[in-house]
Length: 80
Image 1 (cartoon, rainbow, N blue to C red):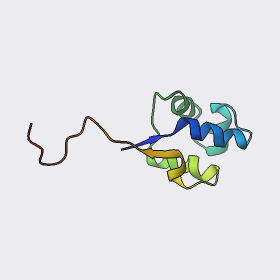
Image 2: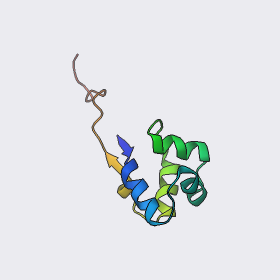
Image 3: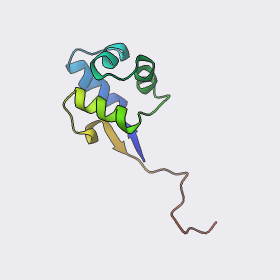
Image 4: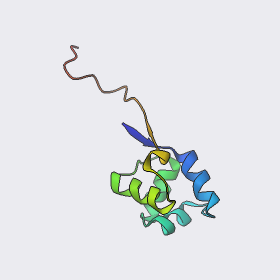
């Protein structure tokens, strides 16, 4: 599972002068409401939005997305 690294996105956006979710939305083309939810951590971007965020700041998508283990998922074939 991948999660947006909000701190890293905010730092990179700030380097480009985008210090608010509104400014991030305007630069990236994601909706304003989505940008606010991504920044406050209440939502995760879909692949299209994650690519928009990365492309707008000329980044590899792996720069803003972190691989995290999903504790809720059991490996395939696991016995309960």
